[in-house]
Image 1 (cartoon, rainbow, N blue to C red):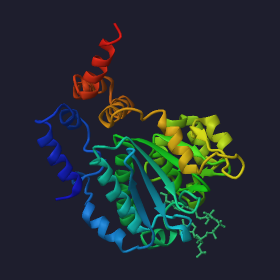
Image 2: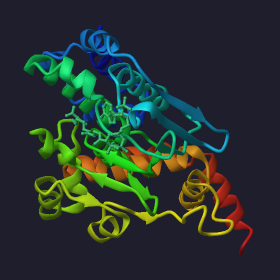
Image 3: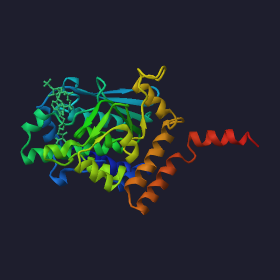
Image 4: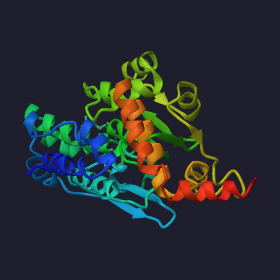
Length: 311
Ligand SMILES: CC[C@@H](C(=O)O)C(=O)SCCNC(=O)CCNC(=O)[C@H](O)C(C)(C)COP(=O)(O)OP(=O)(O)OC[C@H]1O[C@@H](n2cnc3c(N)ncnc32)[C@H](O)[C@@H]1OP(=O)(O)O
């Protein structure tokens, strides 16, 4: 059974066993495309696996912060076909991480990601395979953004094409002082296909999105902060004594938002997600359901107990 159909099946079962299951029942399974769209997850996975190279590595830390590394430095961290499959598998692992609070997405060798591996792109340039790759990556990146984790893209070096799209599939973006995010698709005779345009409009607004895409503008940290694509700029480790590595800086930036138990942090992300994606009444009902998962929970009862001492 295709993964997304299986997830729908599991969600049907979970809807009877929990508030979150019920509200997830109202929400798509996380997959944009399923078998009803003629999307066969296993078929495209096998096709993509035929284009090897690099890896997508996942480190889940006791702190509740995971680090996902796009690891193909000899290709400026371009995503090979097998890396696209890796990415989807890591997202599945993170969907089941009950102790998780946050995720940092970064690239190896001080650069983020230069998009699809052009060698793979050339080999699957026929319309049918291109559409299948597009749907596979839209599913993977939509599920990435919908993780119940606060996610940050740590952009060093360059985030180009699909790499820029990957950066939009995180809640926040922190840019190194010399980094660039560029939607180079127009130069390829393309538009984003991994959901990057849809997410960019929601991040920077339609006018700025039109400028960044139509102009294939190089977004440096200054422009990124100006249009809202960047949420922070990292200090240059060489320049500032004690600045820490980019990863340490990203973890420090996140620390303000992930104090507290994982279930509460995950509930915060869930209510923001539904507010961001669902129509008003659906979002309100989902908020009520998520509220029901933490009301009277261990963290709530402990807080009430400690407050009662302040009479
Ligand atoms: C939906 C979007 C998706 C799609 O349509 O499928 C895409 O993302 S399409 C790809 C979009 N990305 C690009 O167009 C970026 C292409 N790369 C470059 O522009 C440059 O390589 C760079 C990233 C700006 C770096 O330039 P530079 O510092 O001069 O290094 P090199 O160019 O020499 O690159 C080193 C090495 O890496 C290989 N490389 C880089 N990017 C890719 C890539 N996307 N796919 C495959 N290989 C890539 C490059 O070929 C060099 O390899 P060697 O020549 O073997 O040393």
